[in-house]
Image (cartoon, rainbow, N blue to C red; front, side):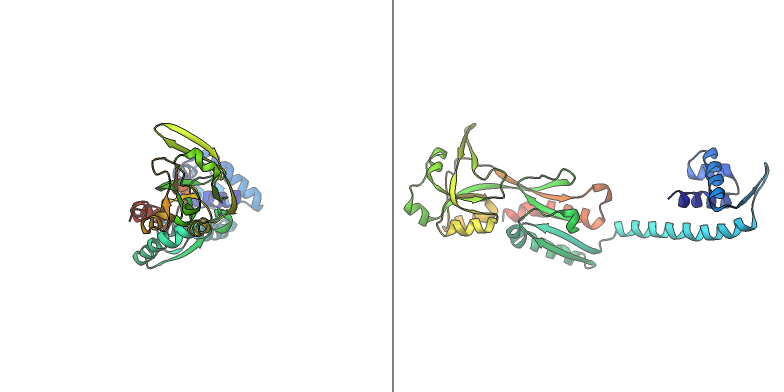
Length: 298
C-alpha cells in the first residue's frame, strides 16, 4: 500500500514538475512529498529524479519507471470510477432475506413490482424464519419481525404489526373462553420458540399490566406452523395480525381479549453500514418503506 501511494505521489511530482505543486494537488506538506520520493528511490534502489534548486528532471530509469507508474495509477483510478458507477447503478443482484409467511404473502409482490421497474436488476429472495447471518450469506437487506439482536447492523422500521390472541371455534367449544389474562394460565398454549420470552406474556389495559406465565404441549419455531396448530384447535397463541387477520374475518379463528394489548411486532429492514450502500439497496429500502405498511393494512 505504501509503494502504491508513493507511485501516485511520484506521478504527481513528474506531471506537476514541482514538489510544491504536487503537494498542493495532493493536499499534503511539501516535506511529506520529498520524504515519500526519497523512500521510493530507496525502495527501488535507483535515482529517479535529478533535482536542483531550479529544476526537476527524470533520470533515464526514472522515465521508464514513470511510464509504469502512470499505467498503474490510471488503472487504479479506472477501477475506482467503475466501483463508484456501480454504487449508483440499479443493476446486479439484490439478495433479500425474509420470514417465510411475510415473504410469500407481502414481500414477494413488492419485489415483483420492484424488478419490473428496474429491468437490469436480479433478485434473490431467501425465505427463512431463523435469523440469517447477513454477512456470511451475502444478504443485502434482511426483513426482521419483532426484535433486533445484531448491533453491528443498521435498521429502519418499515411497519408495525399488532399481535392478536386467538383460538379456533373448535378449541373454544372444549375450553371455557377466557375473560381476563389471569385465566390464560390454565389454557393450552402453542409455544412459538423464536419469541424472546415465549412462556411469559404481558397484557395491558387501562395502564395496568397483567404479566402471566403460560404452558403448552406444542412448541415450534415456525410462525405458519403456529397458525396451523391454531386452526386445528390445538391451543391458543398470539400472532402478528398479518398472519391471522384473514382467519379472524372468515371465522376460522376467534380473537380473544380484544380489549387487552399484548404487544406488537415491529417490522424492520436491516442492512449493513449505510456509508457503503449501493444504490439498489438504498432505493429498495425506500421503496418498501413507502409500500409495506399499506400492503399489511389491505
